[in-house]
Amino acid sequence: MPTKLKVLISAYACEPNKGSEPEVGWQWALQMAKYHDVTVLTRTNNRATIEKEVALLEGKQPLPKFFYHDEAPFFLWLKKRFNAVRFYYVFWQISAARVIEQLNAQHDFDVLHHVTFAGFRYRTAIWNQGVPSVWGPVGGVESIPWDLLPWKHPQSLLPELARNVNNFIQSAPFHVLPKRAQETTVTLVSTEEMERAFHHLGLEALLMPTIGLHIKPMLPRHGRPLTEPLRFLFVGNVITLKGIDLSLHALKEARINAVFTIVGDGPFLATAKRMAAQLGLEKQVIFRGRVPRSEALNLYPEHDVFLFPSLHDTGGYAVIEAMACGLPVVCLDCGGPRVAVKDGAGVRVPLISRKQVISGIAEAMRGYARDREMVVRHGLKAREVIVEHYDWEKKGEHLNEVYLAAAKEKASFQSAKKTTFTGTLRNIFNRMFPVRGLAVSALILFIVGAAGFLSLNYLKRDASAIVEKTLPELSSAGAANSSLAESFNRTLLLAMAETPEERAGYRKELDNFNQQTEKSLELYRRKISTREQEELYDRLMAQRKKYVALRERVLQLVDAKKSTEALALCKSTVWPAYLDYKSAAEKMLNANTQEGRARGDTILKICTITQYAVAGAGILLFAIGFTIGLLK
Image (cartoon, rainbow, N blue to C red; front, top):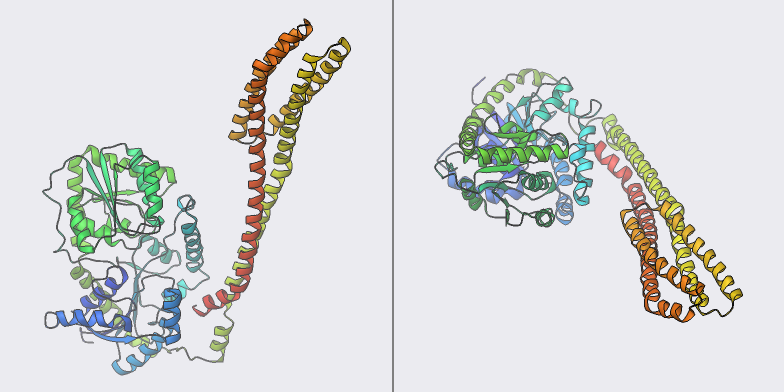
């Protein structure tokens, strides 16, 4: 078998100078063309950018050939109209499999390699082609721990919860991951979490980060004086999974002379700015917004430490760019950054509880603030790691060895029976009535039922709170309001009474109203459930004590038959005290009225959300199950 192989690379995302997945597809194709005869299957949308760059590289190095393919116009319209990239990608892979079958019939490839997308959860076009295949490097099985989910950011919470559930199902022994790995000659993975997922299934996987750099253009920070304040930097999308909130809380806890610059934009930016203000970090945090990549590269050498507490980044281009520029990295001990940040090249903070993660980041900040020479040492080590493990030329050498090993299996693949998408009647039946799709539908039904049960629990809780707390509180506060007005009225009548009999009658009525007030207030005290209610109650009792003391002086004057002085005292002191007492009682009553209204509104919201959620789930349920089953 010749050393120079005929290779087809499937790279849905493949564009030069775009970063992220497009850059991954482009660079792997470019590197492998140095060793083998490479054909790249990619999207027609990438053609203009690719051909422009190919023209610039013509004659300077061996180049791959490109074959462009897109799905039917209807699917393209759906993708553009609804931004349904993942949906389109799945169907692109299905049709690309037929294209690869045709190309293989013409060229007799030695190796097929799927590069992008690099997520493990999607099917690829290279399987079942009767040719040795390389899958990856793939990742994406990294999930956010329960305690670190963005509970206070609902628009991020639901996608992350769905991702965690999807990862659990996709990587389970009964699902498709084992089958996909068994159909692959060599499986490459980007993260240790992905490697463990395969090993737990008894499958082999080779750890090889999917991202890389051209090291020469990356200018190191060495030689810049270590001055105050310590300069931290983050570059990337400002979204919850990047751990920006963890960074801000850690900076507050660290209490060091430092400045934290955040470069990027995203849906969490406004929340991050509010959080920085609430934490009193306005002078320490600089929000630069999104900048061109060339400008971002110039920012790295101007800073001391790169802060990147991402919760599940498979790669982390910004991390290896910072390390190439000689910056140590503070990251979480997970995903792609965990692989890149070797010992001595930064600090990896364990994923434990939220509080412990924040404390770990804060301690790393304090460590670099105390020992500025450690910044230099870790920065030098960081650049060494990138030169050794992330330089594209060296990565190409490693992948070439993988290709040569995979190609040795070609004879056994050609003798094996090849399956296609046309299949038999049984395959058609499985496509129409997918078992996994039905299983997922059952799971979704269970989730919907559980959501309904939980929503009913919330309804029951709030309804019980209204019956057991709010209504008694309102009743007690209302009764107290009524009796205090009547007692003041009887105090005036008592002061104006002319006969002992009238005074005795009014005194008896006053004592009764006073007892009713005390009983109502005692019942209210027993039902207090919030700090606000407690404060309002204490305020009311303070006003009542003042009022009762003044009223007692009036009663003493009445007993001494000094009605004129008693009435004068009522007008000058008791009346203002009564108004203050009455105002405090009304505030307490209003607070309970608002609480009841809020609980009622919550019940209505839960009913509405449940109604729409169940209706939407009912409409989408079998469509989702069918689609997932289709992709098995």
